[in-house]
Amino acid sequence: MVGLIGNIGTWELILILLVAVIVVGPSKLPEVARSVGKAVGELRRATSGIKREFEEAISLSDPPKPQRPYNELIKQDPVEDTAPDEAEPAINSPDDFQNDLTKN
Image (cartoon, rainbow, N blue to C red; front, side, top):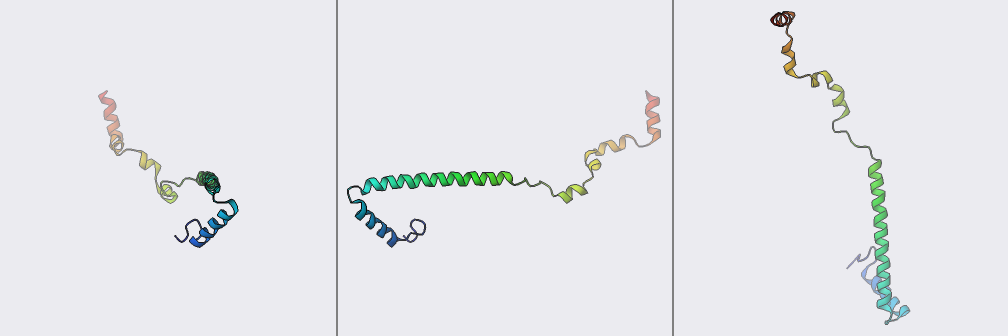
């Protein structure tokens, strides 16, 4: 049971309970322990909520990472990537163009 609650060890916890019994008395100890437990629970919920808000704010302030590295995007030829290969044989020479005109 070492490190039971944070940095409080077993003997420290026993000493705290003994002092609580002496100060509060055995009859009111369950009531005081219940109210202290509720207060500790509320404190933990509040601190976890604040921690979550800070983490969300930090994650929103980080810029999104690019899907592809910048150097790779610079090397990319936009005309080559957008023009389909099928369009190249459509106009082979001026003779083909002339033949198409005479057919129509």
